[in-house]
Image 1 (cartoon, rainbow, N blue to C red):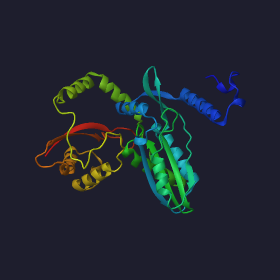
Image 2: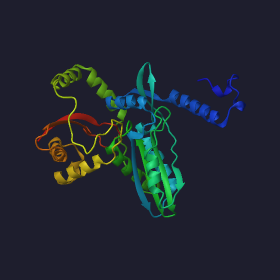
Image 3: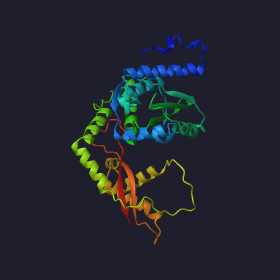
Image 4: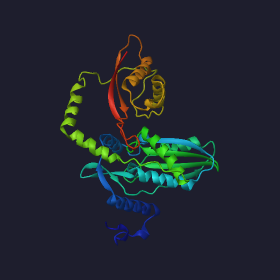
Length: 329
Protein backbone atom coordinates (compact mmCIF):
# COMPACT_ATOMS: atom_id res chain seq x y z
CA UNK A 1 0.00 0.00 0.00
CA UNK A 2 1.30 3.42 -0.87
CA UNK A 3 1.47 5.82 2.04
CA UNK A 4 -0.30 8.91 0.74
CA UNK A 5 1.01 10.94 3.65
CA UNK A 6 4.50 10.60 2.14
CA UNK A 7 3.40 11.44 -1.39
CA UNK A 8 5.28 14.61 -2.41
CA UNK A 9 2.22 15.75 -4.38
CA UNK A 10 0.29 16.12 -1.11
CA UNK A 11 1.30 19.06 1.05
CA UNK A 12 0.12 18.00 4.51
CA UNK A 13 1.24 21.28 6.02
CA UNK A 14 -1.19 23.10 3.76
CA UNK A 15 -4.20 20.98 4.72
CA UNK A 16 -6.85 22.18 7.11
CA UNK A 17 -7.70 20.21 10.25
CA UNK A 18 -10.81 18.78 8.58
CA UNK A 19 -8.82 17.76 5.49
CA UNK A 20 -6.18 16.10 7.67
CA UNK A 21 -8.87 14.11 9.49
CA UNK A 22 -10.37 13.04 6.16
CA UNK A 23 -6.93 11.98 4.89
CA UNK A 24 -6.23 10.04 8.08
CA UNK A 25 -9.63 8.34 7.89
CA UNK A 26 -8.98 7.29 4.28
CA UNK A 27 -5.51 5.95 5.11
CA UNK A 28 -6.81 3.98 8.07
CA UNK A 29 -9.65 2.57 5.96
CA UNK A 30 -7.21 1.52 3.22
CA UNK A 31 -4.89 -0.12 5.74
CA UNK A 32 -7.74 -1.93 7.49
CA UNK A 33 -9.23 -3.12 4.20
CA UNK A 34 -5.87 -4.50 3.11
CA UNK A 35 -5.68 -6.76 6.18
CA UNK A 36 -9.36 -7.78 6.23
CA UNK A 37 -10.78 -10.97 4.76
CA UNK A 38 -13.60 -10.54 2.22
CA UNK A 39 -16.77 -12.63 2.35
CA UNK A 40 -20.09 -12.50 0.47
CA UNK A 41 -23.15 -10.93 2.05
CA UNK A 42 -26.20 -12.89 3.07
CA UNK A 43 -29.40 -12.08 1.20
CA UNK A 44 -30.71 -10.13 4.17
CA UNK A 45 -27.53 -8.09 4.31
CA UNK A 46 -27.73 -7.42 0.58
CA UNK A 47 -31.16 -5.87 0.97
CA UNK A 48 -29.94 -3.61 3.76
CA UNK A 49 -26.82 -2.68 1.78
CA UNK A 50 -29.06 -1.66 -1.12
CA UNK A 51 -31.17 0.52 1.19
CA UNK A 52 -28.02 1.99 2.70
CA UNK A 53 -26.81 3.04 -0.75
CA UNK A 54 -30.10 4.86 -1.33
CA UNK A 55 -30.00 6.75 1.98
CA UNK A 56 -26.70 6.35 3.87
CA UNK A 57 -27.70 8.91 6.51
CA UNK A 58 -31.03 7.25 7.29
CA UNK A 59 -31.04 5.99 10.93
CA UNK A 60 -34.07 3.74 10.38
CA UNK A 61 -31.91 0.61 10.71
CA UNK A 62 -30.07 1.65 13.86
CA UNK A 63 -30.94 -0.70 16.74
CA UNK A 64 -30.60 1.01 20.12
CA UNK A 65 -30.75 -0.19 23.71
CA UNK A 66 -30.35 1.92 26.85
CA UNK A 67 -29.93 0.42 30.31
CA UNK A 68 -29.42 2.01 33.72
CA UNK A 69 -26.38 0.95 35.75
CA UNK A 70 -26.62 1.66 39.47
CA UNK A 71 -23.73 1.31 41.91
CA UNK A 72 -19.98 1.40 41.49
CA UNK A 73 -18.91 1.01 37.87
CA UNK A 74 -15.39 0.21 36.73
CA UNK A 75 -15.39 2.03 33.40
CA UNK A 76 -11.98 0.70 32.39
CA UNK A 77 -13.15 -2.89 33.02
CA UNK A 78 -16.32 -2.20 31.04
CA UNK A 79 -14.26 -0.97 28.10
CA UNK A 80 -12.05 -4.07 28.26
CA UNK A 81 -15.19 -6.21 28.33
CA UNK A 82 -16.52 -4.40 25.25
CA UNK A 83 -13.19 -5.01 23.50
CA UNK A 84 -13.40 -8.71 24.37
CA UNK A 85 -16.96 -8.78 23.01
CA UNK A 86 -15.82 -7.38 19.66
CA UNK A 87 -12.94 -9.87 19.54
CA UNK A 88 -15.39 -12.75 20.11
CA UNK A 89 -17.85 -11.71 17.39
CA UNK A 90 -16.36 -10.96 13.98
CA UNK A 91 -19.55 -9.28 12.76
CA UNK A 92 -18.88 -6.40 15.20
CA UNK A 93 -15.52 -5.71 13.52
CA UNK A 94 -16.84 -5.91 9.98
CA UNK A 95 -17.10 -3.19 7.37
CA UNK A 96 -18.72 -3.33 3.94
CA UNK A 97 -17.44 -2.52 0.47
CA UNK A 98 -17.86 -3.35 -3.22
CA UNK A 99 -15.39 -5.70 -4.92
CA UNK A 100 -15.67 -6.47 -8.63
CA UNK A 101 -19.18 -5.04 -8.68
CA UNK A 102 -20.43 -7.19 -5.78
CA UNK A 103 -20.97 -6.10 -2.16
CA UNK A 104 -18.75 -7.89 0.34
CA UNK A 105 -18.21 -7.82 4.08
CA UNK A 106 -14.66 -7.25 5.26
CA UNK A 107 -13.85 -8.98 8.55
CA UNK A 108 -10.98 -7.19 10.29
CA UNK A 109 -8.57 -9.10 12.53
CA UNK A 110 -8.77 -6.39 15.20
CA UNK A 111 -10.93 -3.37 15.91
CA UNK A 112 -10.22 -1.03 18.84
CA UNK A 113 -13.21 -0.20 21.01
CA UNK A 114 -13.67 3.09 22.80
CA UNK A 115 -16.71 3.86 24.93
CA UNK A 116 -17.83 7.46 24.50
CA UNK A 117 -18.46 9.14 27.86
CA UNK A 118 -20.64 12.11 28.65
CA UNK A 119 -21.75 13.79 31.87
CA UNK A 120 -25.47 14.54 31.69
CA UNK A 121 -28.22 15.84 33.91
CA UNK A 122 -31.31 13.83 34.87
CA UNK A 123 -33.43 15.67 32.31
CA UNK A 124 -31.00 15.13 29.43
CA UNK A 125 -31.09 11.32 29.30
CA UNK A 126 -33.95 11.04 26.81
CA UNK A 127 -32.37 13.61 24.51
CA UNK A 128 -29.08 11.71 24.46
CA UNK A 129 -30.80 8.37 23.85
CA UNK A 130 -32.73 9.84 20.91
CA UNK A 131 -29.51 11.37 19.61
CA UNK A 132 -27.81 7.97 19.63
CA UNK A 133 -30.85 6.36 18.02
CA UNK A 134 -30.84 8.95 15.25
CA UNK A 135 -27.12 8.60 14.63
CA UNK A 136 -26.39 6.87 11.33
CA UNK A 137 -23.54 4.43 10.69
CA UNK A 138 -20.90 4.58 7.98
CA UNK A 139 -20.83 0.96 6.88
CA UNK A 140 -17.75 1.45 4.70
CA UNK A 141 -15.47 2.94 7.35
CA UNK A 142 -17.10 1.42 10.43
CA UNK A 143 -17.68 0.72 13.17
CA UNK A 144 -21.10 -0.94 13.00
CA UNK A 145 -21.34 -1.03 16.80
CA UNK A 146 -20.92 1.74 19.36
CA UNK A 147 -21.31 2.25 23.10
CA UNK A 148 -21.97 5.49 24.95
CA UNK A 149 -21.85 5.86 28.73
CA UNK A 150 -23.96 8.67 30.18
CA UNK A 151 -22.82 9.63 33.70
CA UNK A 152 -25.41 11.19 36.00
CA UNK A 153 -23.44 10.73 39.22
CA UNK A 154 -20.54 8.57 40.44
CA UNK A 155 -23.05 5.78 41.15
CA UNK A 156 -25.63 6.31 38.39
CA UNK A 157 -24.92 5.64 34.72
CA UNK A 158 -26.89 4.88 31.58
CA UNK A 159 -25.24 2.64 28.98
CA UNK A 160 -26.49 3.23 25.43
CA UNK A 161 -25.78 0.51 22.86
CA UNK A 162 -26.30 1.10 19.15
CA UNK A 163 -25.68 -1.35 16.31
CA UNK A 164 -26.64 -1.33 12.65
CA UNK A 165 -29.24 -3.88 11.58
CA UNK A 166 -26.93 -5.21 8.85
CA UNK A 167 -24.75 -6.66 11.65
CA UNK A 168 -27.34 -7.76 14.19
CA UNK A 169 -31.02 -8.37 14.86
CA UNK A 170 -33.11 -7.96 18.00
CA UNK A 171 -32.15 -11.43 19.22
CA UNK A 172 -28.51 -10.38 18.96
CA UNK A 173 -29.13 -7.49 21.36
CA UNK A 174 -29.92 -10.03 24.09
CA UNK A 175 -26.74 -11.94 23.25
CA UNK A 176 -24.64 -8.76 23.34
CA UNK A 177 -26.02 -7.64 26.70
CA UNK A 178 -25.68 -11.08 28.27
CA UNK A 179 -22.09 -11.52 27.13
CA UNK A 180 -21.13 -7.95 28.01
CA UNK A 181 -22.32 -8.49 31.59
CA UNK A 182 -20.44 -11.80 31.86
CA UNK A 183 -17.29 -10.37 30.29
CA UNK A 184 -17.42 -7.42 32.69
CA UNK A 185 -17.70 -9.88 35.58
CA UNK A 186 -14.75 -11.80 34.12
CA UNK A 187 -12.67 -8.63 34.26
CA UNK A 188 -13.33 -8.62 38.01
CA UNK A 189 -12.46 -12.25 38.65
CA UNK A 190 -15.36 -14.39 37.37
CA UNK A 191 -15.15 -17.01 34.63
CA UNK A 192 -15.52 -15.83 31.04
CA UNK A 193 -18.47 -17.23 29.03
CA UNK A 194 -17.75 -19.86 26.37
CA UNK A 195 -17.06 -18.64 22.85
CA UNK A 196 -19.55 -19.43 20.10
CA UNK A 197 -17.46 -21.29 17.48
CA UNK A 198 -19.60 -20.34 14.48
CA UNK A 199 -19.33 -17.03 12.62
CA UNK A 200 -21.97 -15.23 10.61
CA UNK A 201 -19.87 -15.34 7.45
CA UNK A 202 -20.16 -19.14 7.61
CA UNK A 203 -23.93 -18.85 7.57
CA UNK A 204 -23.77 -16.41 4.63
CA UNK A 205 -21.53 -18.82 2.70
CA UNK A 206 -23.90 -21.74 3.31
CA UNK A 207 -26.90 -19.64 2.31
CA UNK A 208 -25.24 -18.61 -0.95
CA UNK A 209 -24.32 -22.22 -1.75
CA UNK A 210 -27.85 -23.39 -0.98
CA UNK A 211 -29.59 -20.73 -3.07
CA UNK A 212 -27.23 -21.21 -6.02
CA UNK A 213 -27.76 -24.99 -6.00
CA UNK A 214 -30.59 -27.05 -7.46
CA UNK A 215 -32.59 -27.03 -4.21
CA UNK A 216 -32.38 -23.26 -3.86
CA UNK A 217 -33.35 -22.64 -7.48
CA UNK A 218 -36.33 -24.98 -7.13
CA UNK A 219 -37.54 -23.37 -3.89
CA UNK A 220 -37.17 -19.91 -5.43
CA UNK A 221 -39.24 -20.83 -8.47
CA UNK A 222 -41.98 -22.27 -6.25
CA UNK A 223 -42.18 -19.08 -4.26
CA UNK A 224 -42.56 -16.98 -7.41
CA UNK A 225 -45.21 -19.12 -9.09
CA UNK A 226 -47.30 -19.57 -5.95
CA UNK A 227 -47.79 -15.83 -5.36
CA UNK A 228 -51.22 -14.79 -6.70
CA UNK A 229 -50.66 -12.53 -9.70
CA UNK A 230 -54.19 -11.12 -9.52
CA UNK A 231 -53.98 -10.10 -5.88
CA UNK A 232 -54.45 -6.32 -5.49
CA UNK A 233 -51.33 -4.26 -4.91
CA UNK A 234 -53.02 -1.99 -2.39
CA UNK A 235 -55.83 -2.23 0.14
CA UNK A 236 -58.20 0.30 1.59
CA UNK A 237 -57.85 1.08 5.30
CA UNK A 238 -60.01 3.62 7.12
CA UNK A 239 -58.18 6.70 8.40
CA UNK A 240 -59.28 9.83 10.16
CA UNK A 241 -58.07 12.10 7.37
CA UNK A 242 -56.24 12.03 4.06
CA UNK A 243 -52.51 11.79 4.46
CA UNK A 244 -49.84 12.56 1.92
CA UNK A 245 -47.45 9.80 1.01
CA UNK A 246 -44.22 10.25 2.92
CA UNK A 247 -41.55 8.10 4.51
CA UNK A 248 -41.99 7.58 8.23
CA UNK A 249 -40.27 5.49 10.90
CA UNK A 250 -42.48 3.53 13.29
CA UNK A 251 -40.80 2.80 16.61
CA UNK A 252 -43.48 1.32 18.88
CA UNK A 253 -45.78 -1.09 17.03
CA UNK A 254 -43.48 -4.12 17.13
CA UNK A 255 -43.02 -4.09 20.91
CA UNK A 256 -46.77 -3.79 21.51
CA UNK A 257 -47.48 -6.68 19.16
CA UNK A 258 -44.76 -8.83 20.75
CA UNK A 259 -46.17 -8.20 24.22
CA UNK A 260 -49.62 -9.32 23.09
CA UNK A 261 -48.12 -12.40 21.48
CA UNK A 262 -46.29 -13.32 24.67
CA UNK A 263 -49.47 -13.07 26.71
CA UNK A 264 -51.33 -15.15 24.15
CA UNK A 265 -48.57 -17.78 24.10
CA UNK A 266 -48.49 -18.26 27.86
CA UNK A 267 -45.00 -16.85 28.49
CA UNK A 268 -41.75 -18.73 28.85
CA UNK A 269 -38.65 -19.09 26.67
CA UNK A 270 -40.64 -20.42 23.71
CA UNK A 271 -42.14 -16.98 23.19
CA UNK A 272 -38.81 -15.79 21.85
CA UNK A 273 -38.97 -18.22 18.95
CA UNK A 274 -41.24 -18.05 15.96
CA UNK A 275 -44.60 -19.78 16.25
CA UNK A 276 -46.47 -19.09 13.04
CA UNK A 277 -49.95 -20.05 14.21
CA UNK A 278 -49.79 -18.12 17.50
CA UNK A 279 -48.41 -15.04 15.79
CA UNK A 280 -50.97 -15.21 13.00
CA UNK A 281 -53.76 -15.38 15.56
CA UNK A 282 -52.33 -12.38 17.35
CA UNK A 283 -52.16 -10.46 14.07
CA UNK A 284 -55.78 -11.26 13.27
CA UNK A 285 -56.84 -9.72 16.58
CA UNK A 286 -54.52 -6.76 16.01
CA UNK A 287 -55.90 -5.83 12.57
CA UNK A 288 -59.55 -6.65 13.31
CA UNK A 289 -60.31 -3.14 14.67
CA UNK A 290 -59.23 -1.72 11.30
CA UNK A 291 -62.09 -3.44 9.54
CA UNK A 292 -65.51 -1.84 9.34
CA UNK A 293 -68.51 -4.08 8.70
CA UNK A 294 -69.53 -3.97 5.06
CA UNK A 295 -66.30 -2.43 3.84
CA UNK A 296 -63.56 -4.36 1.95
CA UNK A 297 -61.19 -6.06 2.36
CA UNK A 298 -61.75 -9.07 4.57
CA UNK A 299 -58.38 -10.55 3.65
CA UNK A 300 -55.03 -8.95 4.24
CA UNK A 301 -51.52 -10.04 3.26
CA UNK A 302 -48.74 -8.91 5.58
CA UNK A 303 -45.01 -9.34 5.14
CA UNK A 304 -43.39 -9.88 8.51
CA UNK A 305 -39.94 -11.00 9.71
CA UNK A 306 -39.05 -14.32 11.25
CA UNK A 307 -35.77 -14.79 13.04
CA UNK A 308 -34.96 -18.13 11.38
CA UNK A 309 -32.93 -19.26 14.38
CA UNK A 310 -32.02 -22.82 13.53
CA UNK A 311 -29.43 -23.26 16.28
CA UNK A 312 -26.31 -21.38 17.35
CA UNK A 313 -28.35 -18.81 19.26
CA UNK A 314 -25.16 -17.36 20.73
CA UNK A 315 -23.99 -16.15 17.32
CA UNK A 316 -24.61 -12.54 16.36
CA UNK A 317 -26.28 -12.28 13.00
CA UNK A 318 -28.71 -10.36 10.86
CA UNK A 319 -31.14 -13.19 10.09
CA UNK A 320 -34.68 -11.86 9.89
CA UNK A 321 -36.61 -13.40 7.00
CA UNK A 322 -39.68 -11.67 5.63
CA UNK A 323 -42.52 -14.08 4.91
CA UNK A 324 -46.01 -13.31 3.62
CA UNK A 325 -49.00 -14.19 5.80
CA UNK A 326 -52.58 -13.94 4.58
CA UNK A 327 -55.05 -13.06 7.30
CA UNK A 328 -58.81 -13.46 6.94
CA UNK A 329 -61.59 -12.28 9.24
